[in-house]
Length: 249
Ligand SMILES: [Zn+2]
Image 1: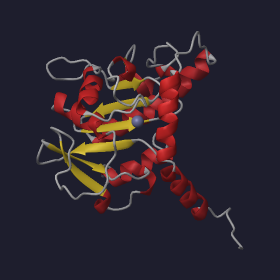
Image 2 (image 1 turned 90 degrees about the vertical axis):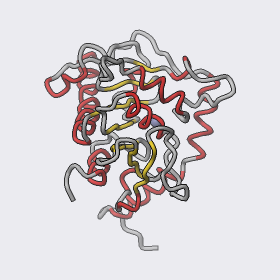
Image 3 (image 1 turned 30 degrees about the vertical axis):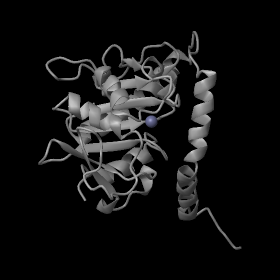
Image 4 (image 1 turned 180 degrees about the horizontal axis):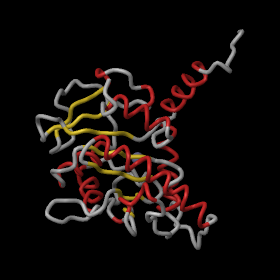
């Protein structure tokens, strides 16, 4: 398997804690730019076969095969970024804890070491509450093409090229775009490392917090419980695969 293969990339990103039970990677179809691939809705670290991949239309994030397995609810993040920017061929969406503080504390996430120059002097922060409709869930997830398009616009636009490599997402995580899987994976890993280094340098300087609203906290709590089986199964697999674990029951 090539290191640029989506299956290998899921494993790297999980090992680096960019992805845990949540988050995902997409890649545009190499021969048909109107389509892209993502894994089915499982923890990325347990993806093991091309059978785990689903092909989607960029236009509406609907599966090419109507009987495909259940996909990620946030796939519109990927489809709308690929739709807005023809040169983007891969996207990583992450909930990495090291990065999340910079989505709420008002401190600009900026390149502070040599591996993260792609971050530039400031990364845009997307706030779902600026765009979500009153009758939609306020769980901060990007479930529609409309919200996905709002996030894609946050990357800036110059001749259909994004101005920014990543966009932070308030109380949620971040999304990185790239011309290839390697680009997107590298940017997501070094965004996380840059955030860790910047936090250490600032000694967790935080002037104020922009925490979840009461409604967002309620909806996100419900959403987490609905999907709790996903991390649980992954943690179970990790324990079973560990040589430290002995079960004499
Ligand atoms: Zn997410």
